Image (cartoon, rainbow, N blue to C red):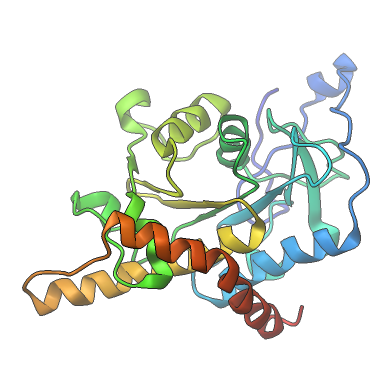
Amino acid sequence: MRLFRCACHSGLSYLRSPADAASGAPAPKSGGKVDASVFKDIAAASRILADQGVVDGFGHVSMRHPHDSNRFLMSRSLAPALVTPDDILEYDLECECVDARGFGSFLERFIHGSIYRARPDINAVAHSHSPNVIPFGLTGRPMQAMFHNAAFIARGVPIFDISEKFGATDMLVGNNSKGDALSAVLADKDVVLMRAHGSVATGPDLQTAVFRAVYTELNARMQVTATMLGGHIAALSPEEGRLADEVNRNAGFRAWDLWKSRVGY
């Protein structure tokens, strides 16, 4: 499929080219009907990330299809704070849209599809350019878990440098090859930084992925402050991180309920 930039939607997007349409190549089949509450939660997740300062006009969040592990759901190409349930589209794991309905799709949907292919345990992905996180992908200073809510960071946060495999690029993960390279660097971790770009947070469910995206940004801010204070940083150990994250996986729903109410969902 040839890619096009679509000016009628915010962000980068694609539409099927005339040649693709003329070829008669069928769109992938749907994974099945999804309850309206799922679309509402994905829209809420997008708006929460905007409300919490993790995304601005760019960034996106997705969720694996609840009835078909080979499909995922995410918004059409749109500023995160504007996403509604009606904007959610379905994709196969090659990132082909089941029914675009005339909408454009995010160019970097390949981040999501590639991670879902590589990690069956992951059911939600959030990509952002949160400002306090980006410097950690530039300086080589390891991100450390500053407090218990960011316990997942104690497992380690690798850095994906797109230039190592692809040379000079536009820095965007715009195809499956680049997505696969990113997911390989993510490996078995929960978060991966993207040099000079942003980060990706993942989770076994939508609420956890959003929780991790928010607290990755907050943790980065705290680490900068702790570094400025000087001296030893008594960050969480890997074992402390493991134990605290087990608690957070349940308690995080309290934050989800609060954040949803803040964005009117």
